[in-house]
Image (cartoon, rainbow, N blue to C red; front, side, top):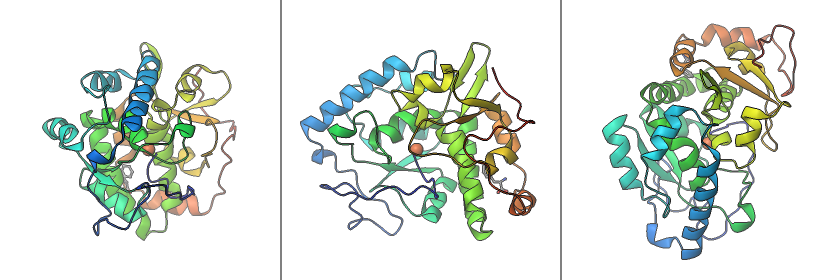
Length: 283
Ligand code: PHE
Ligand code: FE
């Protein structure tokens, strides 16, 4: 999961994980492909095999179509190969980073159609749950959506909006938009509810929970409501927001947020499980 500027991920560093000592000024590093061990490649294959069984019927078509065209069941992807495919489609590029990067660095990459991509893979004890992004989350969650032209433009617009939000002191609000769309977004389709959020699609448990469980609240996309809503990083989401199309998402987020931020300044945040009378629920 990426910037989540509010999230407070633990720093851990075994081996090269979280090694920020050899990075360039823009926080990028080289993907050290030869450093992956056979055990790590095997872990990748098992993560991939499990998750690819779970996404049909739960992920949106745009995601599934792109995923099927990506040949990485057999091992951790080399970035040049992914970049050749992405470059030819939406002109996005992956850049390797040691882990989470500062907000402005993150936004600047997105604004230039570069996705900061964690290159290391989780440990075995994190197989089913990891609290920070690794190469499996970043690839399986984020990369397929970068092939969709409208979503690709949304991600870039988000990066530009981030630079602006930082200057306006509005990051906590904007971060929630990323969380509730890019990471945990749902979409209504003629076939039913589907997910396009990376945090859902790379999670073995949440992928089913998000689209089928009666527990969480599913609210129709509402920019203002999203920006007021806190979120949990340590459990399945209590509220999901549902779009009807990526064009809707793009159009709703296109206007200048400056007046919206001024309005939000006067309002209290909402808890992650808030139930508002005016919520338009999706059943
Ligand atoms: N319109 C937003 C702004 O003025 C920019 C933005 C676009 C932010 C898409 C997020 C997502 O800040
Ligand atoms: Fe992410």
